[in-house]
Amino acid sequence: MLDAAHGGDDPGAKLGAQAEKDFALALAGRLRSLLVARGMDVVVTREADVDLDADHRAEIANHAAAAACLSLHATLAGANGGPSVHLFLSSLPATKDVGLLPWRTAQSAWIERSIALAGVLNAALNAAGIPVALGRTPLAPLDSMTCPAAAVELALPPFADAHQASEAANAEFVPKVADALAAALVEWRSSESLPGRNQAGEPQP
Amino acid sequence: MIPRHQTVLLIVLLLASAAMGTVLWKQFRRAHERLLRGEATVPTEAPLVAPDQPATLMVANDADNTVEPRVLTLPLPQDSEARARALLGQLFEIDAAPDATHPVPGGPDSIAQVFLLPIPGANGKAAAEPPLLAVVNLTGSFAGGHPSGIEAETLTLRSICATLNANLPRIEQVRFLVDGQPRPTLAGHADLTRTYLAGPTEPGSGTRP
Image (cartoon, rainbow over all chains, first blue to last red; front, top):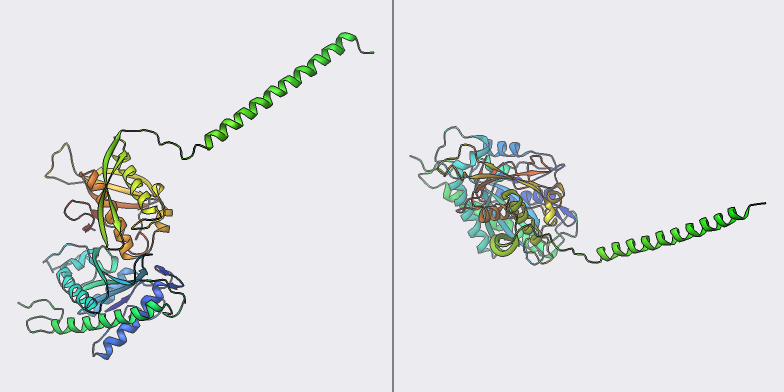
């Protein structure tokens, strides 16, 4: 499940001439193409510039019973920093109770799987030579998702053009990140399909 | 024909008016010069509300996604709420500096108030010193000007929580308001509707609904 963050009246961060909502949508489209080409089924939360609240995003993810959920974001890189990736997980504490899950803390039952997913994503990004910063934070759609979930935030130099990745550093960096994420998700799906795990990757009794 | 004594009286009155006008003009000039001298002394000396004390500010760094302690000596009020506000004001002054490692515009005026409340239902601590919930009221201009991004917003909140806990260890939880009202996110990402845990083990990293 790919969630292109923001949309509609919520532009997100300003990336120079481009808004975060447009960049996230383009990145989700690129990543979906890469995953479909590798034989994976992909659900996206939005395919156009529409308003979508956090609850609706989590509903789409939970109904999909996805093997992995990625929320795609972007921000401006610091003045002294080059492009990099920030990988964030929910800050909810892990719980083993998978009975009736409160909506706002549903991710707590999946946090250990989310940590494992972040490990696979981090390894793939590092292997591609992409700097990664890991962290945990309360993030509305992530906290309500019942799937291994992570937020991927690309820190980029500002775009000079509103509609395409004309910035030289971004034109090279963004496809590299998409390729690394696609490779990581393929590897994740392979590990999830191992005997002894159910569809969601939980160990079977 | 005007009598002589009236002519003399008129001349005396005119002379008196001229003298009074001269005195008033000179006083006006002196007052104006005093005012100008006062403005020329900017920046004014901070009022001494308390003796200087060491304080630990947890300063964020965008380059490596960390929050590191920086020990300063500051004049801090004795009152805990005023002290918390002064500490956060100093923290935001560092973030607003041109060479900041976590640049956030705003400065000391970004904190409207800090309220400290006993945590309801907290136990296991001495009744005389119950753990506290800090309610940090940020200004709308600070939230509006804050850089938008998961990492940037998270670092700001971690930095605030860790600074409060480092200097006022009884503060174990932190909630945020903007202009006195609840707000969904700081600048589009970090959830401000949660209660942040500010304990020493995981400063700012844990949350409660």
